[in-house]
Amino acid sequence: GNSVTQMEGPVTLSEEAFLTINCTYTATGYPSLFWYVQYPGEGLQLLLKATKADDKGSNKGFEATYRKETTSFHLEKGSVQVSDSAVYFCALNRDNDKIIFGKGTRLHILP
Amino acid sequence: DTAVSQTPKYLVTQMGNDKSIKCEQNLGHDTMYWYKQDSKKFLKIMFSYNNKELIINETVPNRFSPKSPDKAHLNLHINSLELGDSAVYFCASSPRGTGAAGSPYEQYFGPGTRLTVT
Image (cartoon, rainbow over all chains, first blue to last red; front, side, top):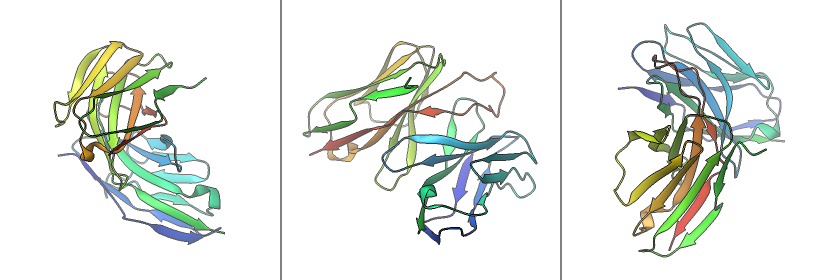
């Protein structure tokens, strides 16, 4: 079946460090891929998305590229800030009405 | 201006009680969802409605009953609450896709309702 696997956290980095959160997926066909972010005490909000192979989604300095050949959608940011501390969820939409989420990766950024 | 709103934000109740959580969206979306997030932040879909019709019903105890009076509202009623029901419940909405696989439409989440059963 369809599934999403992302690296387990927590991930702790110093401010201005480079961030990578790995995400791989299993799905037939061509799912749409998403990264959602959940700040403390809030609901999830869309961070970025990509809807076809080789697309790059970007927002707020974060980027992720849809890699069909490696079934991956890794999240990257060149220089993280304390305000980026949150839980990040990788997700896919294969069946139109149902988004499948990864288990989430908690990110801590130290000043 | 709130796109997806839920009430209440916090709910503390005793085992065996019946409670409801309300959700409303003002985005004009056709599809609404309920998710349960456990203490480890794992997010699991429970139900989805499209234009008041149930389209996703995951393996959820029948003590949980969603109700959609119109496409802007999706409420969740829980009977005979148990300790294991303690979690954060999120409502979400999205535009209906085209019917093709791989919908590009993201979901918009409410702020969550933290349910604590004692």
